[in-house]
Amino acid sequence: MTRTDISLPVSTEQNALLHTMVPGGAHTYAKGDDQYPESLAPIISHGRGGHVWDVDGNEYIEYGAGLRSVSLGHAHPRVLDAVRGQLDRGSNFVRPSVVEIEAARRFLDTVPTAEMVKFAKNGSDVTTAAVRLARAATARPMVAICRDQPFFSTDDWFIATTAMSAGIPERIAELTVSFPYGDLDATEAVLTEHAGQIACLVLEPATQQEPPPGYLAGLRELAHRHGCLLVFDEMITGFRWSEAGAQGLYGVVPDLSTFGKALGNGFAVAALAGQRELMELGGLHHTGERVFLLSTTHGAETHSLAAAMAVQQTYVEEGITERLHLLGDRLAAGVRQVAADAGVADHVLVRGRASNLVFATLDEDRQPSQPHRTLFMRQLISGGVLAPSFVVSSALTEDDIDRTVEVVAQACVVYRSALDAGDPTPWLGGRPVKPVFRRFA
Image 1 (cartoon, rainbow, N blue to C red):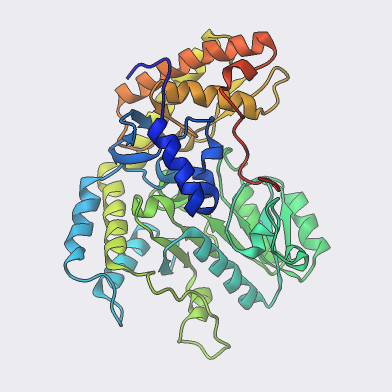
Image 2 (image 1 turned 45 degrees about the vertical axis):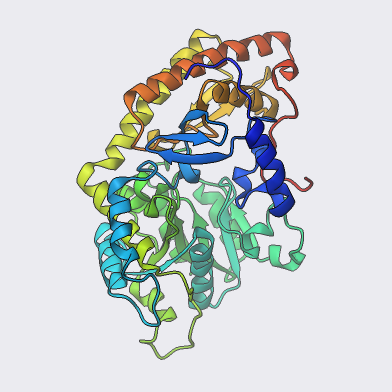
């Protein structure tokens, strides 16, 4: 798998073809070829376990599989067996399937802090449903989101706050305010400034940093004291922190929470979970005004729910969360060591919980640098490592980790050369990678 250079003629041709038919060349902005070095954005043919192959025939050790969704590895046998068991029984009916009962029971057993659950196909829908439910329950119009976290939904209430707000009326953005992670005093100031107007606080309970002691419990108390709800976005923390998510690990129960990504191991399934008195506002067993919570034709496809149940069973029975942490610890230690050996320990950084690692690429002044990220990614891809992050799947082996560290070591030597030159341009091979959220293409 060792390579010093790589050519992707078929991938390059197919990327161009995608742009003629699909706006942005991908169905998820984070998968766009602008996120990869020029002419080094492979089109994937197939995957197995922790590896993928591109249409040019190259094999890669893959990280961040499916944008963190494929945490068990590609084509996991237990998941595929569960899916196959439903395919010849029908996938969608005019009334609920018995699989919906089984899937709801399995989810609530796995996440015992929740009392009711409703399934959908993606994280944006369930998180927006949580916001809608909070607004209905509190009769308040505004939402407060954590400003230190990158993404919550494709819907207007969130996208209006980003650099890609074109097409959204400005007054929509006025209904969303932000608060900093880990700072209860600053959050209370936001709640006080908009007294009686904020329906909920929305945040990922933890991502690149652990919550300060008492923070999540304090945030819940603060929200309730100001008459609003606490919503945990567990798209990333769900399963990777514990089978019951961050709420299960830290012992703080939100009013509502949303799950996805790892829940289906690549199959499309997401969940809105929460306390019965709130969730039931979207049901039929109350006398108040009805809330249009979630109503999706494909939200309860039997094969996706079967995949979710298999994922949950596998996590519990095989200790997947622990394995993710062990693999991540091995990778982080190795990368930090080779970065130090190459003299770039202050420039190539590994951050985050072991099960959810990312890397940062800093320039000579130790500032985040897209050109340096481009250089680093080019070296990784050329070495057979496809890594927009260092998020592991449980299908990776210790040998995969060790091979990755070897490739990173080679990349760090080049990185040092670029720092010494004071200009990474000669090593970029073209335009630098670009941030997802930007105003102009």
